[in-house]
Length: 342
Image 1 (cartoon, rainbow, N blue to C red):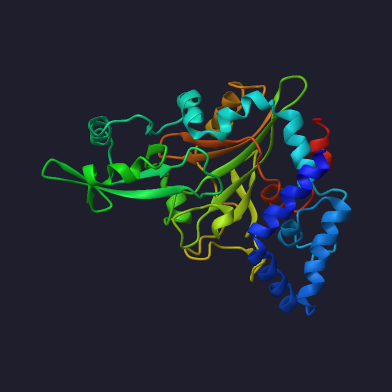
Image 2 (image 1 turned 60 degrees about the vertical axis):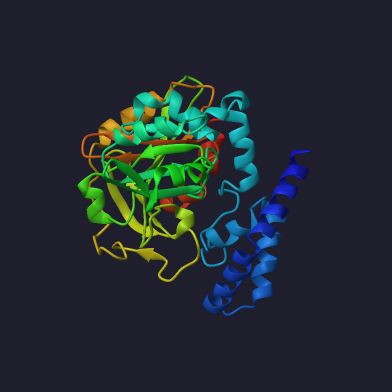
Protein backbone atom coordinates (compact mmCIF):
# COMPACT_ATOMS: atom_id res chain seq x y z
CA UNK A 1 0.00 0.00 0.00
CA UNK A 2 2.87 2.39 0.84
CA UNK A 3 4.41 1.81 -2.59
CA UNK A 4 1.09 2.55 -4.28
CA UNK A 5 0.69 5.79 -2.33
CA UNK A 6 4.28 6.73 -3.17
CA UNK A 7 3.69 6.00 -6.86
CA UNK A 8 0.62 8.26 -6.87
CA UNK A 9 2.62 10.99 -5.12
CA UNK A 10 5.46 10.74 -7.66
CA UNK A 11 3.10 10.86 -10.63
CA UNK A 12 1.06 13.80 -9.29
CA UNK A 13 4.11 15.81 -8.22
CA UNK A 14 5.84 15.11 -11.54
CA UNK A 15 2.78 16.32 -13.43
CA UNK A 16 2.75 19.44 -11.25
CA UNK A 17 6.42 20.09 -12.02
CA UNK A 18 6.55 18.73 -15.57
CA UNK A 19 7.98 22.01 -16.86
CA UNK A 20 10.94 21.57 -14.51
CA UNK A 21 11.53 18.01 -15.73
CA UNK A 22 11.56 19.19 -19.34
CA UNK A 23 13.72 22.22 -18.53
CA UNK A 24 16.30 20.13 -16.64
CA UNK A 25 16.34 17.52 -19.43
CA UNK A 26 17.09 20.29 -21.91
CA UNK A 27 19.83 21.68 -19.66
CA UNK A 28 21.40 18.22 -19.48
CA UNK A 29 21.12 17.88 -23.25
CA UNK A 30 23.23 20.99 -23.70
CA UNK A 31 25.70 20.00 -20.99
CA UNK A 32 26.18 16.32 -21.78
CA UNK A 33 25.25 16.21 -25.48
CA UNK A 34 22.56 13.58 -25.21
CA UNK A 35 18.90 13.82 -26.12
CA UNK A 36 16.13 15.24 -23.92
CA UNK A 37 14.30 11.92 -24.18
CA UNK A 38 17.33 10.03 -22.87
CA UNK A 39 17.49 12.05 -19.65
CA UNK A 40 13.72 12.02 -19.21
CA UNK A 41 13.83 8.23 -19.56
CA UNK A 42 16.78 7.90 -17.13
CA UNK A 43 15.02 10.01 -14.52
CA UNK A 44 12.04 7.65 -14.51
CA UNK A 45 14.25 4.57 -14.69
CA UNK A 46 15.96 5.66 -11.45
CA UNK A 47 12.54 6.00 -9.85
CA UNK A 48 11.65 2.44 -10.85
CA UNK A 49 15.01 0.95 -9.82
CA UNK A 50 15.94 2.99 -6.75
CA UNK A 51 12.85 4.86 -5.52
CA UNK A 52 14.30 8.24 -6.52
CA UNK A 53 11.89 11.00 -7.43
CA UNK A 54 12.50 11.88 -11.13
CA UNK A 55 13.41 15.45 -10.14
CA UNK A 56 16.07 14.12 -7.75
CA UNK A 57 17.87 12.53 -10.69
CA UNK A 58 18.70 16.05 -11.85
CA UNK A 59 19.10 17.65 -8.42
CA UNK A 60 21.67 15.00 -7.44
CA UNK A 61 23.37 15.27 -10.86
CA UNK A 62 23.29 11.48 -11.18
CA UNK A 63 24.59 11.45 -14.75
CA UNK A 64 27.43 13.90 -14.15
CA UNK A 65 28.51 12.68 -10.71
CA UNK A 66 30.37 9.44 -11.35
CA UNK A 67 30.77 8.90 -7.59
CA UNK A 68 27.01 8.91 -7.00
CA UNK A 69 25.88 5.64 -5.44
CA UNK A 70 22.10 5.08 -5.38
CA UNK A 71 22.55 2.61 -2.52
CA UNK A 72 23.90 5.41 -0.30
CA UNK A 73 21.39 8.03 -1.47
CA UNK A 74 18.48 8.66 0.91
CA UNK A 75 15.88 8.40 -1.84
CA UNK A 76 12.42 9.88 -1.55
CA UNK A 77 10.72 6.59 -0.69
CA UNK A 78 13.30 5.88 2.04
CA UNK A 79 12.80 9.36 3.50
CA UNK A 80 9.04 8.89 3.51
CA UNK A 81 9.45 5.74 5.62
CA UNK A 82 12.15 7.35 7.78
CA UNK A 83 10.00 10.34 8.75
CA UNK A 84 6.97 8.12 9.29
CA UNK A 85 8.96 5.84 11.61
CA UNK A 86 10.63 8.56 13.68
CA UNK A 87 7.86 11.15 13.91
CA UNK A 88 4.70 10.18 15.75
CA UNK A 89 1.84 11.26 13.50
CA UNK A 90 -0.10 12.76 16.42
CA UNK A 91 2.68 15.32 16.96
CA UNK A 92 3.35 16.28 13.35
CA UNK A 93 0.66 18.98 13.57
CA UNK A 94 2.84 21.06 15.92
CA UNK A 95 5.25 21.53 13.03
CA UNK A 96 3.02 21.48 9.96
CA UNK A 97 0.72 24.20 11.34
CA UNK A 98 2.74 27.39 11.90
CA UNK A 99 0.12 28.73 14.32
CA UNK A 100 0.69 25.78 16.65
CA UNK A 101 4.44 25.97 16.14
CA UNK A 102 4.53 29.64 17.15
CA UNK A 103 2.42 28.90 20.21
CA UNK A 104 4.47 26.02 21.61
CA UNK A 105 7.94 27.22 20.62
CA UNK A 106 7.45 30.84 21.66
CA UNK A 107 10.25 30.63 24.23
CA UNK A 108 12.75 30.06 21.41
CA UNK A 109 11.50 32.81 19.14
CA UNK A 110 12.94 36.30 19.48
CA UNK A 111 10.27 37.90 17.29
CA UNK A 112 6.55 38.48 17.88
CA UNK A 113 3.73 36.91 15.91
CA UNK A 114 -0.04 37.20 15.71
CA UNK A 115 -2.67 34.57 14.87
CA UNK A 116 -5.05 36.27 12.43
CA UNK A 117 -7.93 33.89 13.12
CA UNK A 118 -10.86 35.75 14.75
CA UNK A 119 -8.78 38.93 15.07
CA UNK A 120 -10.63 42.25 14.95
CA UNK A 121 -9.49 45.34 13.08
CA UNK A 122 -8.87 47.17 16.37
CA UNK A 123 -6.81 44.30 17.80
CA UNK A 124 -4.74 44.15 14.62
CA UNK A 125 -4.20 47.89 14.70
CA UNK A 126 -3.04 47.77 18.34
CA UNK A 127 -0.66 44.88 17.63
CA UNK A 128 0.97 46.65 14.69
CA UNK A 129 1.33 49.84 16.73
CA UNK A 130 3.47 47.94 19.23
CA UNK A 131 5.76 46.51 16.54
CA UNK A 132 8.90 48.37 15.54
CA UNK A 133 10.13 48.64 11.97
CA UNK A 134 8.60 49.23 8.58
CA UNK A 135 8.01 45.63 7.51
CA UNK A 136 6.00 42.58 8.56
CA UNK A 137 5.80 39.02 7.24
CA UNK A 138 2.42 37.40 6.53
CA UNK A 139 2.06 33.65 6.12
CA UNK A 140 -0.30 30.78 5.47
CA UNK A 141 -0.32 28.30 8.35
CA UNK A 142 0.80 25.44 6.10
CA UNK A 143 3.16 27.32 3.78
CA UNK A 144 6.21 25.36 2.60
CA UNK A 145 9.26 26.14 0.51
CA UNK A 146 8.79 29.87 0.95
CA UNK A 147 5.45 29.80 -0.87
CA UNK A 148 2.45 31.36 0.89
CA UNK A 149 4.75 33.91 2.53
CA UNK A 150 4.75 37.65 1.76
CA UNK A 151 6.63 40.68 2.98
CA UNK A 152 4.47 43.71 3.86
CA UNK A 153 5.51 47.35 3.93
CA UNK A 154 4.11 49.26 6.91
CA UNK A 155 3.75 53.03 7.07
CA UNK A 156 2.40 55.10 9.94
CA UNK A 157 1.10 58.56 9.09
CA UNK A 158 -1.19 61.00 10.93
CA UNK A 159 -2.45 58.32 13.28
CA UNK A 160 -3.25 55.88 10.48
CA UNK A 161 -1.53 52.64 9.46
CA UNK A 162 -0.92 51.80 5.82
CA UNK A 163 -0.12 48.30 4.53
CA UNK A 164 1.49 48.19 1.09
CA UNK A 165 0.05 51.64 0.44
CA UNK A 166 -3.49 50.80 1.59
CA UNK A 167 -5.09 52.05 4.77
CA UNK A 168 -5.30 49.17 7.25
CA UNK A 169 -9.12 49.10 7.29
CA UNK A 170 -9.11 48.68 3.49
CA UNK A 171 -6.40 46.01 3.57
CA UNK A 172 -7.96 44.12 6.49
CA UNK A 173 -10.01 41.57 4.52
CA UNK A 174 -7.15 40.66 2.19
CA UNK A 175 -4.85 40.18 5.20
CA UNK A 176 -7.41 37.86 6.80
CA UNK A 177 -6.95 35.45 3.88
CA UNK A 178 -3.67 34.55 5.55
CA UNK A 179 -3.17 32.97 8.96
CA UNK A 180 -0.19 34.59 10.64
CA UNK A 181 1.42 37.97 10.92
CA UNK A 182 5.01 38.09 12.15
CA UNK A 183 7.44 40.77 13.17
CA UNK A 184 10.11 41.27 10.52
CA UNK A 185 13.33 39.71 11.79
CA UNK A 186 16.35 42.00 11.50
CA UNK A 187 19.32 39.71 10.95
CA UNK A 188 22.82 40.03 12.35
CA UNK A 189 25.13 42.33 10.38
CA UNK A 190 27.34 39.36 9.42
CA UNK A 191 24.41 37.93 7.45
CA UNK A 192 23.75 41.27 5.77
CA UNK A 193 27.35 41.27 4.61
CA UNK A 194 26.77 37.92 2.95
CA UNK A 195 23.42 38.84 1.43
CA UNK A 196 21.24 41.85 2.34
CA UNK A 197 18.35 41.08 -0.05
CA UNK A 198 16.43 38.88 2.41
CA UNK A 199 16.46 37.10 5.74
CA UNK A 200 19.05 34.32 5.42
CA UNK A 201 18.34 31.28 7.55
CA UNK A 202 20.16 28.21 8.80
CA UNK A 203 18.72 24.70 8.45
CA UNK A 204 19.80 22.47 11.35
CA UNK A 205 18.68 18.84 11.35
CA UNK A 206 18.30 17.12 14.72
CA UNK A 207 17.66 13.43 15.42
CA UNK A 208 16.81 11.97 18.82
CA UNK A 209 18.36 8.52 19.21
CA UNK A 210 17.12 5.54 21.27
CA UNK A 211 18.95 6.90 24.33
CA UNK A 212 16.96 10.18 24.06
CA UNK A 213 20.09 12.11 23.10
CA UNK A 214 19.65 14.94 20.59
CA UNK A 215 22.12 14.52 17.73
CA UNK A 216 22.96 17.15 15.11
CA UNK A 217 22.98 15.53 11.67
CA UNK A 218 24.26 18.70 10.02
CA UNK A 219 23.65 22.37 9.32
CA UNK A 220 23.42 24.43 6.14
CA UNK A 221 23.14 28.18 5.53
CA UNK A 222 20.61 29.27 2.87
CA UNK A 223 21.37 32.57 1.13
CA UNK A 224 19.11 34.54 -1.18
CA UNK A 225 20.39 35.72 -4.56
CA UNK A 226 18.67 38.90 -5.80
CA UNK A 227 15.53 37.60 -4.11
CA UNK A 228 13.45 38.42 -1.04
CA UNK A 229 13.54 34.72 -0.06
CA UNK A 230 16.50 32.53 0.86
CA UNK A 231 14.69 29.31 0.05
CA UNK A 232 16.60 26.62 -1.82
CA UNK A 233 13.58 26.20 -4.11
CA UNK A 234 13.48 29.93 -4.93
CA UNK A 235 16.84 30.23 -6.63
CA UNK A 236 18.96 30.69 -3.52
CA UNK A 237 22.27 29.03 -2.77
CA UNK A 238 23.29 26.96 0.23
CA UNK A 239 26.59 26.35 2.01
CA UNK A 240 27.59 23.61 4.41
CA UNK A 241 28.40 24.66 8.00
CA UNK A 242 31.04 23.01 10.15
CA UNK A 243 28.88 22.16 13.18
CA UNK A 244 31.86 22.18 15.55
CA UNK A 245 33.07 25.67 14.65
CA UNK A 246 30.06 27.49 13.17
CA UNK A 247 32.09 28.40 10.07
CA UNK A 248 30.99 27.95 6.46
CA UNK A 249 32.69 24.97 4.91
CA UNK A 250 33.30 24.60 1.18
CA UNK A 251 31.55 26.19 -1.78
CA UNK A 252 27.98 27.32 -2.24
CA UNK A 253 25.62 25.31 -4.46
CA UNK A 254 22.14 25.45 -5.96
CA UNK A 255 19.36 22.91 -5.93
CA UNK A 256 18.59 23.01 -9.66
CA UNK A 257 21.22 22.23 -12.31
CA UNK A 258 23.09 25.46 -13.02
CA UNK A 259 26.20 27.05 -14.43
CA UNK A 260 28.36 27.43 -12.49
CA UNK A 261 27.69 24.39 -10.34
CA UNK A 262 29.54 25.79 -7.32
CA UNK A 263 30.16 29.25 -5.88
CA UNK A 264 33.32 30.21 -4.00
CA UNK A 265 31.78 33.67 -3.41
CA UNK A 266 28.24 34.93 -3.04
CA UNK A 267 27.10 35.82 -6.59
CA UNK A 268 26.10 39.40 -5.75
CA UNK A 269 28.08 40.51 -2.68
CA UNK A 270 31.24 38.62 -3.72
CA UNK A 271 31.94 37.64 -0.11
CA UNK A 272 34.12 34.52 0.11
CA UNK A 273 32.04 31.71 1.63
CA UNK A 274 34.50 29.08 2.85
CA UNK A 275 35.64 29.82 6.40
CA UNK A 276 33.14 32.64 7.01
CA UNK A 277 32.33 32.63 10.75
CA UNK A 278 28.69 32.78 11.91
CA UNK A 279 27.73 34.56 15.17
CA UNK A 280 26.07 33.06 18.27
CA UNK A 281 26.78 29.53 17.05
CA UNK A 282 26.99 27.75 20.43
CA UNK A 283 23.74 29.41 21.50
CA UNK A 284 22.07 28.31 18.27
CA UNK A 285 23.03 24.67 18.85
CA UNK A 286 21.81 24.90 22.44
CA UNK A 287 18.52 26.43 21.26
CA UNK A 288 17.65 23.69 18.75
CA UNK A 289 18.57 20.96 21.23
CA UNK A 290 16.28 22.47 23.87
CA UNK A 291 13.49 22.96 21.31
CA UNK A 292 13.82 19.28 20.32
CA UNK A 293 12.79 18.30 23.86
CA UNK A 294 9.40 20.05 23.64
CA UNK A 295 7.90 17.22 21.56
CA UNK A 296 10.42 14.36 21.67
CA UNK A 297 7.79 12.17 20.00
CA UNK A 298 8.86 13.97 16.82
CA UNK A 299 12.38 12.58 16.79
CA UNK A 300 13.76 14.28 13.69
CA UNK A 301 13.20 17.91 12.76
CA UNK A 302 14.77 20.30 10.27
CA UNK A 303 14.89 23.60 12.17
CA UNK A 304 14.99 26.90 10.29
CA UNK A 305 16.79 29.47 12.41
CA UNK A 306 17.62 33.15 11.91
CA UNK A 307 20.26 35.01 13.91
CA UNK A 308 19.69 38.56 15.10
CA UNK A 309 22.19 40.92 16.72
CA UNK A 310 21.59 39.30 20.10
CA UNK A 311 20.39 35.72 19.63
CA UNK A 312 19.09 32.91 17.40
CA UNK A 313 15.34 32.88 16.72
CA UNK A 314 13.36 29.90 15.44
CA UNK A 315 11.44 30.51 12.24
CA UNK A 316 9.89 27.06 11.82
CA UNK A 317 10.41 23.32 12.26
CA UNK A 318 10.06 20.81 9.43
CA UNK A 319 8.96 17.30 10.36
CA UNK A 320 9.57 16.11 6.78
CA UNK A 321 12.85 17.92 6.05
CA UNK A 322 14.35 17.44 2.61
CA UNK A 323 17.45 15.27 2.39
CA UNK A 324 18.80 16.90 -0.80
CA UNK A 325 20.22 20.02 0.81
CA UNK A 326 22.11 17.87 3.33
CA UNK A 327 23.46 15.43 0.75
CA UNK A 328 24.58 18.21 -1.55
CA UNK A 329 26.26 19.94 1.40
CA UNK A 330 28.03 16.74 2.51
CA UNK A 331 28.77 15.66 -1.09
CA UNK A 332 27.70 12.14 -0.17
CA UNK A 333 24.64 10.06 0.53
CA UNK A 334 23.23 9.95 4.06
CA UNK A 335 21.08 6.81 3.88
CA UNK A 336 23.36 4.56 5.96
CA UNK A 337 23.76 7.30 8.57
CA UNK A 338 19.98 7.63 8.88
CA UNK A 339 19.40 3.86 8.96
CA UNK A 340 21.30 3.76 12.27
CA UNK A 341 18.40 5.63 13.91
CA UNK A 342 15.65 3.28 12.69
